[in-house]
Image (cartoon, rainbow, N blue to C red; front, side):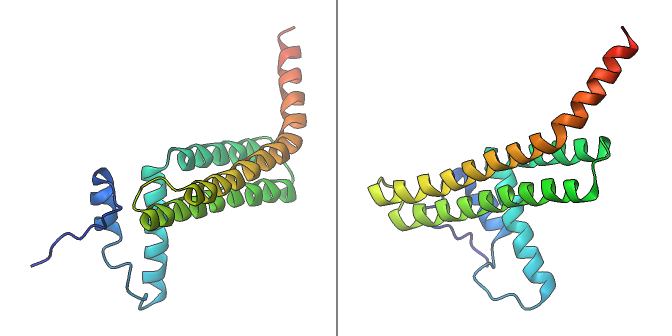
Length: 155
């Protein structure tokens, strides 16, 4: 008989997600497909439980969509994609680090745990600002031209 195992650090509202998708995560992946499945489970977990990850995904899709709509050069789309991907990657690492810290301190307050979590969140924030800066430099000029041209058609 299978029993549901949860860590003492796993909040009750996350137990179904953690046990359903990561039931055998302690095992070494037997093949490449299993490795990808574990990775997808981590991405899926972050998307389901982390509001900021969903916000970053939405902004990434918007930036890439605008890049394609505005017919930016391939290199410009690639730069936006890379910076957006780095933000998402750092958000996943932040989620992993926060979970690990919570597990270590059993979700009690500790000054060093706060520093670790705040620094990881700060890394995500810096990368998000850089991504917005890069996307703004590449997207705003052609978007402004399009808006001005559209406004002149009705003037």
